[in-house]
Image 1 (cartoon, rainbow, N blue to C red):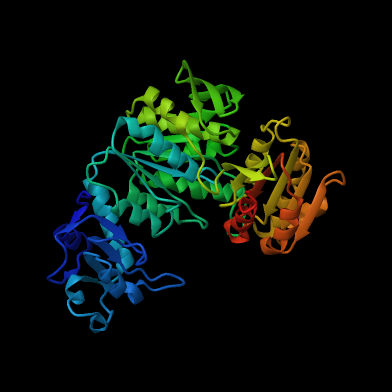
Image 2 (image 1 turned 180 degrees about the vertical axis):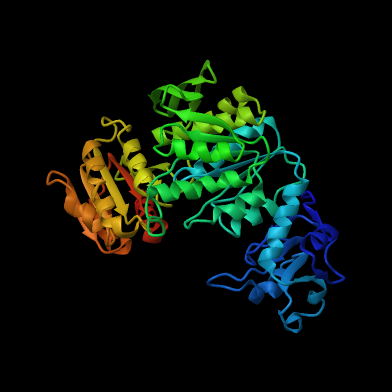
Amino acid sequence: MADILWTGSEVIKAVGGKAGKAVSPELIGVSIDSRTVGRDEIFIAIKGDNFDGHAFVGKALEMGAGAAIVSDNFDLSALSEGQPDKCIIVADPLEAMNELGRAARNRCRGKVIAITGSVGKTGSKEMLRLALSPSGKVHASEKSFNNHWGVPLSLALMPSDCDYDVAEIGMNHPGEIIPLTAMVRPDIAIVTTVEPVHLGFFKDVEEIAHAKAEIFSGLEKGGTAILNRDNPFFGLLETAAKKAGANIVSFGLHPSSDIWLKNIQVESDGFWIITRFFGKDFAYKIGIPGKHNAMNSLAVLAACEVAGADLYQAAKALEKLDAPVGRGQRSKVRHGEDGHFLLIDESYNANPASMRAALDTVGQVSCTDYPRRVAVLGDMLELGETSAQLHAELASSLQNTEFDAVFTCGKDSKSLHDALPAHIETFWQPSSADLGDQLVAFIKPGDVVVVKGSLGSKMGQLVNRLKELDT
């Protein structure tokens, strides 16, 4: 039987709602999706840009939800007999979820770690989930639940007895992080890096750095900020963190970093990382390649140390690290009678920094095993007026990593296509759907293929097309 997450009375008190007489006394989860809500979970009827959860309250209760949090202007008479008695009526269901998240944070006695940054938030969160597990009960946000509804939902799902909570906090406008970090109230805040992303909403990268620094406004007294020493905005972030009263821990290639990355040794199944860790030599292995993953692992282990976890067990756990779907997952796809090609799925999202990092990992793949390198790239979105230029600048990375062929799709990726040198075989189409047939016809055994683009570019469709070649 699942553990009790909330009692009915705790929820009613937290959200300040008027409750029906049949709200379940023991609730084991929280959901805003009627398609997946489980028995004895709380369904919160959030009104989003494209849907209104109130249209699905009846379905959620039919599926066994133990309570439904609804707006006071919701027509209860539209529900089936007995269902109104399971409703908790509030002025605003989203604010009620915020209050439930705050109540979860207030009862938490474990260490809370928050992560933000232009690149590496979700990957670092998953590293922390894994690294902290040997030292206690860990709760971490699911998927990329890092916005104005994802953060409070993740907090509301936090068990009262967890030893560590890991929260991912994202933004694409100034001021968005402030209310989220105030809710999370982290003991430790990590900023992975600051890069030119969401430039459609910011005047420059420095403004992005100021927005990331908002995370320190919610730090608990005596909290710690873990910062990338190599980033050009380290000084800005350090100043903001100190102003908030934070202790500073730095990581990076810079020798003055508290966690100094001295060397990386590449192996077929990951990296050996040699560091100077708070003044002592320390080496460990992570199970996935990529310099960006190595860098983020420094921040992760720094957080483990500051949070009081077992550092050696945390490092040992990172050996088992595996990239998730869309974020560097590797597959050997059978193709032809006896051959295969290596598919690197980076289709979840993209910006200039993560694009270069993904292309760099291809350079670490053995040319003997995989003699031909193929990049399949979609538009990087939300880059504003500089988008075409930022796409074109990727040509140098593709040339340096010696790609043999580059497939591009999307309006801004045409700038990259046009900037590529003549010795690289190139293909461009307006959309990922248009590119599929050409790509499938081109791929052969012995290729290494990386697929990457912003989520809106729908590059996952091309990943699926390539996986279907498995014979």
